[in-house]
Each structure stands twice: as structure tokens, then as C-alpha cells.
Image 1 (spheres, one colour):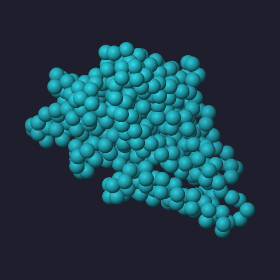
Image 2 (cartoon, one colour):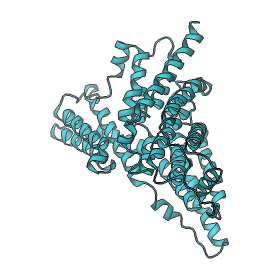
Image 3 (cartoon, helix red, strand yellow):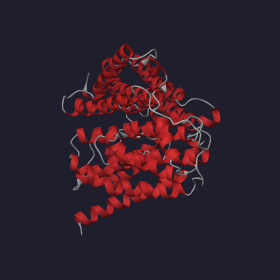
Length: 440
């Protein structure tokens, strides 16, 4: 295969145009999920698989070497599988903790203390911001959105701002840690920033989230969630505390697998799933008549969320293969790194921050004289900018799956302006730090 054939630009061919139309149409139905009552996984999966089917037809019709296409799809499958299995294990642990009453006990402890809706709003937001740097933004958002829905299942005036607050806080908290988001992990592994350089983003992350949370809190209703003083105290059932410990160990194993053992992060997660299943076997052999079933927990996870990620990552991978994501270098040369990196945040909200960051890294754009600072800026904007639209980040998609019919695209967009204000504040803080350190 010639060098030219290895780098085909198919953006102006019929397959490129048709694939782009398919992607835009799928995006429309994802965004209009409430209107058409269609699960977001369906159009995402159709676009992701359909684009590569079209590419395959184009290659066959034109007699092109299909080995390159096969190789690219294999790489994409590897990338998607890592995310897919990582999320599957995290969701399984969450379902296990739900079954063992962990979140019911947490909900009881919060509500029984007499906390108001507003105080619960701030408590869950703070927890999301400080847990996500360690446990990653998606896992954190899934855990706390579960707590949120157990506090009050009916009050949308509380649930919607609360869900948005958790998503924004989890994404902002994940932006200043290499372990907080898939995008930050990619930047760190690629050597674009040292571990301590991510801490530079802490002021921008926390102030941006705080401004958004302050604005959102004005829409949180007064009063307290319903609580019956005679309500039986919720307690963690047998095995619940041990499962919490195993989940924490599993997160550590994922980090160690990737950073120390040079294995995919999902390998550590799957090992953690094996430990969970072995613990279930142990407790079933040594407990009373009540038997646990790990497969029932797996059966309860949000498979539509997993399939959505498969579809959207496959679709973006297809657009990248066609050449649509190869324009980053030209944009950086024309508009400068600061402007484009800020724009990446808005693009992340539409396409999802993971494939966007992947495209930026693959493009290897010229970041100018202050490359480290610019890589930190794009890390910040991709992470925080993913919150602007409900499905712009893994955390947002996860919460949409957990709070189906409550936290939706339309309910999120009603308050999106508060996130935009926080996004601007985050960039302003970064710019102030840049000025102080390098010019002042």
C-alpha cells in the first residue's frame, strides 16, 4: 500500500458526506431523546456501526486494501473495550452496594439529620468534587446520583439541579488529577504534563464549580425531603462494608495496573470483579439462608449507557478514520493554542471529551512556547467543557442513565447557562495564574 493510500482523506467523497449526515442525524435524535421517546443508545449505536459499514462498502467498491480498515477497527475495539469493561465493573459494584443498602443507609443518615434540600445539594456537590480525583468522575457521579435519587425520588426541582451539580463537580474535580478522568489520564500517560502540574488546575476547577453551584443553588427548593420520624433506621446489610472496601481496592488496582504493571486500567477492574465474585462465594458458604448473586447485580447495570459509549466512540472513530478530525493542526496554526483550546471545551460538550482529547493528542498540534501550560488548559477545558451538555462527558451520560426521565438533555439545557458562567470563570482563573507566573 502506498503512503498516499495509507492517509486517504475521504471527507469530500460520498462515504464521508453520508457518514457525516448519519452522525449529525444520530446526534439530533440523542439530543431530542425526550421528544421522540427513543433511548440515546439506539441512534448512537446505529451511527457508530453504520459509519464503518459504509466505509467497508466504499473500500470494497474501490478495490482498496481493507487491511488498514481492519487494523483501525481492531485498535478502536481495544479502546472501546477498555472503557466498556471498566464501566461495567464500576456499575456492578454500585448495584452491589445498592443491594446491600449502602446508599439507603447514607440517605437515612443525611435526611435524619434534618438537612434541607439546599444543604444536601452542597454536601453531594462537595463530595463529588473531592471524590472524583481518586475514584474518577464517572464512578463518583454514579455513586452520588444514586444517593440523590434515594433522598427524594419525586422532587424534580431538587433532583435536576442536584444532578447537574454532581456532574459539574465530578468533572471539575476530575480535571485536576491524572486519575480523575479518562482525558486527564490520556494527557498524563502521553507525557504532556507531570503529576504535580495537574494540581495547577485546582484553583480554576474549584472556583468554576463553586460559581456554577452557587447559581444553581438559587433554583433548589426550600424545605426538607420527606422523613418519617418512625421510619426504620436503614442499615448496611451483611457484606456491604466489605464490598465498599473491595470497591476502593478495585480502584487502586486499576491505577496500579496502568501505572505500575503496564496493563490496561480495566484489567485491574476486572481483577476487582473477580475478587467481588470470590467474596460472594465465601459469604454464601459461611452465612445464613440469604444468598447473594453477583450475576443479578451485573443484570441490573445500565446496559444502555454502555451501548451508548460503544456507539458514540465508534462513530467518532469512524469520522477520524475518514479525516474529519485531522483539522486540529491547521486550527492551532491559524488561531493560536489558547483560542483553540478554549474551543475544545465547547466541542467536547457536543462530541464527548474522550474522543476529542484523543484527536488533539493524535494531531500533535503546536502549543507554542508555553506548551505545558497549554496542555493543562486543554485538559481543563475538555473536562469542564464536557459538562456544558448532558452527554458531553462520561459522568453526564452515567447520570442520565441513573436518573432516566429526570435528568435529560432538555432539563440540563435549562440550566446550562450556569455551567457556561463557571466555565468562563475557570478559564479566567487559569489565565490569571498564567499571567502571574510568566508575565507578572
